[in-house]
Length: 304
Image 1: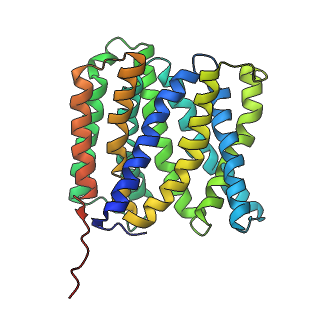
Image 2: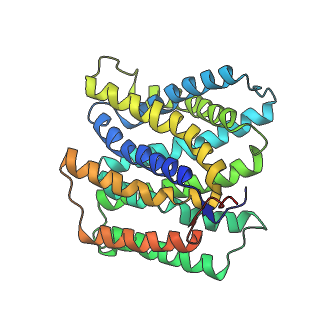
């Protein structure tokens, strides 16, 4: 779908809602990590979300693909879009603030532009995109603080893990365009999460052992939020906004997520980010706006 330069008030409202939902996921994940290990957490996130999305697919009476090549594509997509980034970012949140994780997560759009330019002939890196990418990288470097790597420690590793997750998201986007573009989005999301679950179940058992079910209420509430609302529900909302606003404007959601995550991290967890994190986000936001182009509010035509 080609990006559109105008965006309606309704699309803005749903875009902000999507950003708020995804912004809240960082807090819910951090709360759950106090009681369950990373692999098990990601299994919860993908498994419950897959079940809900398949229920939606059945209710909508959408065709379920049977071709082995499609299910192979689901497995690869599940690894690239869920298993790898969810796992890396969840592990990263054990060692860095939720707000900083959300800021680094915004680099997904920057890496997405680079991967698309490498893979697709119609996504060449123009001068405007190159400027946006450059500002994005400066923002990431500022948020991390290059001095962190003078004494390479667990915090530096965690930040690199989060960035590696954003690179995986970028490749997932290219993979989806190449192999899943002909499927209904609800089916593609359900199949992808099923592929993720099939990969995660044996890995979680091997790494963490059988998952415990006697969990605190806060943990179960967090699992419900990040799996049912911030994963399956957010995917459905994502495709609604995509249809309303276009792919270019949809990228603006990455600017909404960090403020929500930062406020929740400060209010609930007492987190305080360094000034360089905010400066880095400002540069990253400028880069994303240049990549996208400033959207215009769509106005209704006056009736005669």
